[in-house]
Image (cartoon, rainbow, N blue to C red; front, side, top):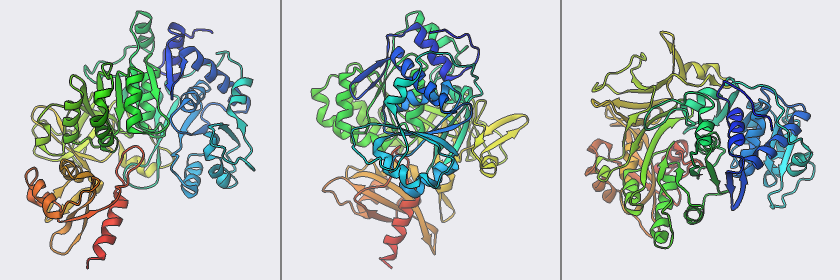
Length: 546
């Protein structure tokens, strides 16, 4: 293989340089199968040549529709090699949602697991631009009748293994479709160089030092830096899992992937593969993992684990303390950020944090500040509640949505800012206290209530497994704080019990006035809350009480 000389931060270029210095190093372990950097490179080259032979090239949007596995890693790398753009497809979407995404993303190609073939077939005739489908045989036996496609292994076998692609650039696009907590998904468009520095390891989260050159990660490996074994548990169809995997691939680390999230299997995998760092997305993963670890920790050797890290969703203080107890000596990390901004801050958990309630106070990431409504920076210690903003390496905007882009991405005095809608205080010591999304803030009697704070306190009650908090109309208060609670099996907490618990941690006006119990709180696979669902459920439940 020919080693390239390059000067830009491009994921394909950086990966190829690592292949040159550590070809035999394990790149990906997926459900027990290991592929080295050289093996991953060869398969990605072959797939890239197949795609190029079908007419795909720079700027073309190709969806990846799969559970966590080799399809994701090899698909992303192949597309980067030919300067095409991977598009993440939510595997939970039904036909109407798929049709919207395929059309909005301007998909011209698709790499998918066979399980999803019937759904693809049902919408393909309505998406004439989608001209090429590659299916991976996942053993599902799903029907493929009527769906014109190419088998993934045939495509790989027929493609050239050579690395003979043209030059690439840090300007090449990486796009992530994100649904957030409301609305249909929207594509966030990044330059690869920008997302590398904002999210994928270009800036050290602890020291805030920037990677000096695209060659630096491979030079570290060449000079003897060993791999960390990284285990991102979120689905790669969401930004947290996808970026966590990319971060490993361009740092020379080993990535462990599990097709589906199973808490017991996750811990057994972590022990078997000697995992060093586990990534999750908030309480939706943390709570079942904590319950599983309570059962299993005595029989597992987790001595390889160095860090347990959460991002992209609330990580309740009570759960952090549980992990501190179950994983002595392991660093418990809570990172905050958004697809639209990159990483905004990080907190290393300490004992006693649960007494502070549900909010997170973090050390600000590089280029992260708090601004007022006019985008003027708020100084440390300001009593004013503002908005988390990031400058420096930020996205280009939302795909095909100039109006929303104008509301989220600003330029002030020649500097661009991304403001995703998270409200915060700038503390006197320079840290940032995250209060929650302004779009779901509750105004009760003129007081602002941030759902995440109340949710964090509720989830500290021993009978509560999960909770979402919304505001319902109230004649006296404008809105009343209402909780939708998933209790632990066999438990039936009352509103009085939960209110008493909350009053010990938060002001009385924040305490839920109504509580509705549900079998399961609805969240996205990434762990993000589905506030529209919670509000609809609460409204319907409240109506039956009138």
